[in-house]
Amino acid sequence: MVELSELPAPPAAAGEPGRAGRNLPVALAVGLGLGALVLTTLYLYRPVFLAVVVAAIVIGVRELTQALSTKDLHPPLIPLVLGAMAILCTGYAEGEHWMINSMLLTIPLLVLWRAVRGVDGIVGDISVGLLALLYVGFLAGFCALMLAAHDGDRRVTCFVATVVASDVGGYAVGAMFGRHPLAPRISPKKSIEGLAGSTGLCMLVGYILMTTLLHAAWWQGVVFGLAVVTTATIGDLGESMVKRDLGIKDMGTLLPGHGGILDRLDSLLPTAPVAWALLSAFGPFHP
Image (cartoon, rainbow, N blue to C red; front, top):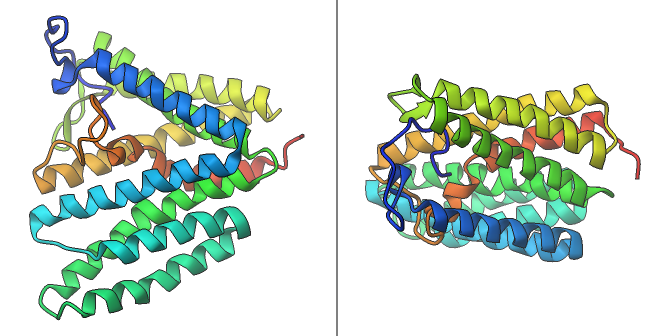
């Protein structure tokens, strides 16, 4: 994702890239467009939203495999794409058991597909292929599980909006008050103050959305916000470590001002299973 809790940088001239080399107006316009697409498809017709998620995950898998090639690692793309699509579709249609089965059945396909190319480098290629399958495909499957619930549109809204709150809170507070680096060896421009902003806004948004959309208890909203900010931050720092090791700034270039699709999913993916687990534990909610 975009580095949202960075330390202050000198202001950029109009039309020039701002913080972290990003053009903030362009990034904001793209972000609003993505938000409109998500909300429109989510509340208009859920299968269309699922198709949007599938498309995003397929692109994300491709971005990750291309990024790994910088280290001469080449996981087979086709079985990864097929596996990710199966995980999402079976998770939505049949539930978590079939979602897990889809992931497990993809593993031998991944191994066999790669074995056709020979044994040189096969251990590394299969290892990163499993990483891609779990990190992108399997974690995304929990969004499909949330979507499949009777109030799936509202559950997904709570999940996505609270993750976005982590980004926004970190950006706003980090830009104004950030002085102390959070993890200087991983992402030197992120600040402890930005993390505090993320935490506060996640708790607030979690409380508001969980109590209004799902009629949950106030403390459930606060707990949800705290869990989201934890996993979102871990996901953000985790992808930063991967990109630092690969020697790249972004996973892709599809989204102006943001990088690639995977740069927008880095906080959402590790948060999805936690959000699903908490919403399942707190529910069932009233219609």
